[in-house]
Image (cartoon, rainbow, N blue to C red):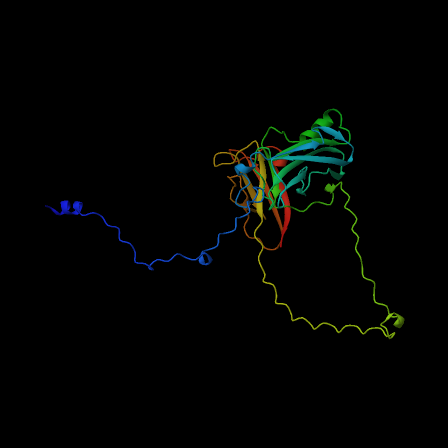
Length: 318
């Protein structure tokens, strides 16, 4: 009989471990279960980029003013409607008047008022943004509306003014958002039409010098001794601020190697062309004032027509 046959005839035997060789771990020694993590809403989740599918239904639109409306001069009432996107954790919208620096809007339940709006044609754009100002790159996370402050200029004069101030909403449009720039002195500003509730603050009355108002013996109580001086605080470590990011909203165009591109000129130095629609971290900058300009280029690297497809900004870094 060969060795294989002998091995088949020997039954397998399970050898039990001797008693006491294995002990169950007491419940107190077991690793406690980790507490369930709070599920972040997409608006608050920093792991999601602005182009995440979670924002595909985000939508913003203008309820007022109506497109091409003629509104009273100087003051313009603006109403925004948001759907599919919650203002959680600092999420907000940016409102852009003409091509001025963006204005942050944290609450759309109340109308906004634009003041100092000069007569003539104007443009409003709204962009949904994450708590850290990253642009939401969903198809309907952007809206624009055109209007006249005061009556429309008649004839050719009005048509020429509209052509200079209003973009074609069906053509490629580059909307600059970050880094936020410095507004000019004549920029329109946004004011919430909401009156804050009155806050009552109780102030303690000062101590009296009249000895008749002192203790039971008619002597004013002695003032408490001054507290001992605190040791000098250690100087806080100097932390360099992160470089600002460039971000924008692009309408009716796609970026790519063989498609549209965005050109950046920072402090007279041209950076690498932007070929992907995502935030672009700028290089480290010295503290102070800086100038940035961006252009939308077509497939042949030529400037796309339209005054709004070129934006110049001045911004500060700490």
